[in-house]
Length: 393
Image (cartoon, rainbow, N blue to C red; front, side, top):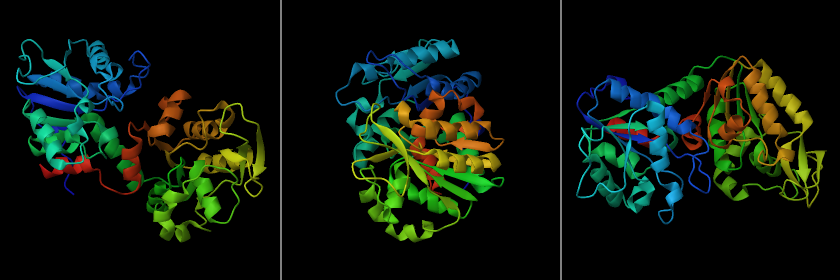
């Protein structure tokens, strides 16, 4: 595949530039932004466009999963936050319609309304997605993808707009792709990966990494899905047995593989709640009516030892139900071990990224990715569909 087309190699002077950002920020019940890290990630791209003479910058993004144009998911507050960060006026436009956009003299920086307020953004019909993409493309001369978190999505703003405009990757996308790709393809050893979470489809990442890593540490519900497959009684632990059906052919590559470490003990609870009764037990002793919600102290020690020796670490997926304080210790200990190591460390966004943010450890990691799903695709050795759209143009 040719080199990724990047903003730094594009001429944007006196051009109207449409920038797809990943401003899918968390908001409270009033629409107030509670974490602006995804907005801050795209500020270097916006500043670059300003500094290099862009005639007009049109910011497009989605927030949440709107069902009926909920105003708490409007982009108005995101526009205000961008304005504060760059100290420039940002005009929020509700409907560009037939009236078009304000002139660049009146509004050099514009933010459109939530893309997902238009059903065509995610429509399964490619013609409908392309019709929306063409409308968006008509507003500008160049398209910049600066939304790594949605690079695995075949949505109009990601894969249709590039069909109609010269296109390139923004600064944050370029940095995330390069950092993750280099970490996986040219790591320092020992190379340790930590895979957690629920979904069995993460086995794709495990298999892809087995030839590259020295150890794979598996936690979360995924670990207990495998333990059950290997003959263990996991009680009432939530597992992805249905998702595992598509990966039966991979199980033999994992079972008894010396590179793969699974939990040897766990914290079990009598219900899925913060106030549940909890106790430590071996993974061989989980009783009916009890569910594993975290790894146990022996497993934490085993995992911490591997991480302390590592020179490269990648992590995707929490180790336990970290949202409940009783069952957050495993995730906390793993995050702390990675933060305290001397290794190059890449955290693959999503829930594991949220855990690192919550624990105040983000600055101790080499990279906390903005996209859990997108980073997982790279861990799996797969292409990102939105980046392929840039290559095609």
